[in-house]
Every structure is written in C-alpha cells, then in structure tokens.
Image (cartoon, rainbow, N blue to C red; front, top):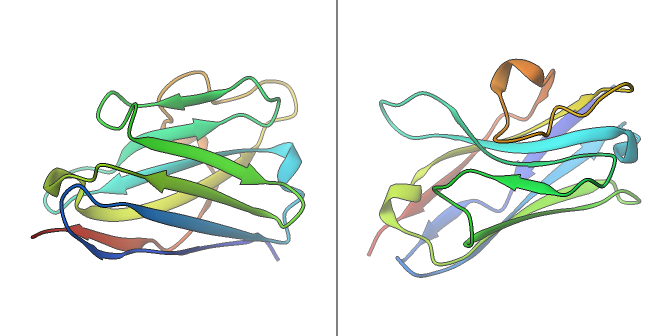
Length: 129
C-alpha cells in the first residue's frame, strides 16, 4: 500500500526554520516526481516546490524561492522540505505529493495539483511571534 505521511510541522517564530519530512511507505521513490503544496486559511492549495525523478533539478514558486529547499533520500524512502527565514504568510497546512511518470516529468515548473496522484494528509505550520 502506497502511503505518504508528513511530519515536522509546528509553531515557529518569524525568521525561524523548520524541516518537514514526508515518509513514502511502499514507494520506489527513485521513480517518482515529488512535490510540496500548501493551503493557507481561506485560500486555494498552491504548489511550492517540485523535484523530478530524473534528476533535472528542483522547482520553486517565487514565494519560497531562496528560502525553502526540497530534497529526497530514495533509499529511506523519504523526502524533505527545509524551510528557512519563515514569515507569517508561510502559515498553512503543508502537503506532500508524489506521482510516477515513466515518459516525462511533471516537475517542469511550479507543481500543479492535478498532476499528482498520491497525497499526504498534511501538517500544520504556524509562523507567529
């Protein structure tokens, strides 16, 4: 059974850091594009980072570029979102997602929700003094 489980959310002060983890049980993660999304209160879910299985490199939304880093350990299998210089506007529920695309990567830019078939349940990140 394929399952994604996020951990690492919590309350952090502005300027602080958090690392989110997404455990990918049952996945041969090396074959999967992986991504992080977030949904703030009253807003639609937005894609913020994507990492292609083919090693083409990570993609980031403008809102997190330079502050967040996506990475993966295919052997565990687990992938991460390192978040630095956090701002109150980063407050949201964060979701990890994955999809297997043997012919082409879906990580060609900011990740699109409809292209990912596997999702975690989310973890809350709150940035507040």
